[in-house]
Each structure stands twice: as structure tokens, then as C-alpha cells.
Image (cartoon, rainbow, N blue to C red; front, top):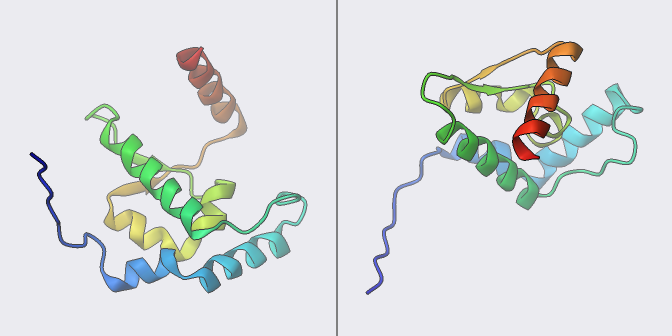
Length: 119
């Protein structure tokens, strides 16, 4: 027996338009590469599929993190800026994420811990 359930949309049309419009994705890429060309060297605009996968990963990670942690995102992350940028900050606040600003040393520590956990 197969059980299929259809749930209503969780995001309104405005939020969906922020992440599903290819023209907006292209503008985000152009804005980011114009502002910091060396940072985005060899990068291409993200596809809608890549953006949806990133959103799924963010939500999955938030769902399965420990319950005492808040949902956190680095709004300065390259992929975040290419896929969502500042115009999507309200979407992530709506989803109960908060912005974190990590120093280089904090990033190194976090990457080191991630490597230990995976390896």
C-alpha cells in the first residue's frame, strides 16, 4: 500500500519568486562578481536546481541539529550570496534562521571540527 500526502505550500508566492526566478539568480551573480571579481573567479551563476538543493541542505541541517542550537547561516558565504543574497534574508528570518559572522579563526576551527567528524 502506498500512502501519498499533499501538503500546502509553506512559502508564499513572494518568497518563491525570490528563489525561483532565473533572472534574479543571474542578477545576484552579476552583482557579486562585479563587487568582488577575484572572490568569484571561475564561478558560474547557480541554477534553480542548485539553489533548491542548497535550501534543502540548510533546512535539513537545521532540522537535525541539536535542539538547543539556533538555525544559523553565514549570510556572507559565497554560495549563499550567489543563490540568495541580501534580498532573501527575510525569507531565512521567516524560516527562523539567524545570521552569524565568523572570523577567519572561527572558520578554521569549524572546518577542522567538521573534518574530524567526517574522518
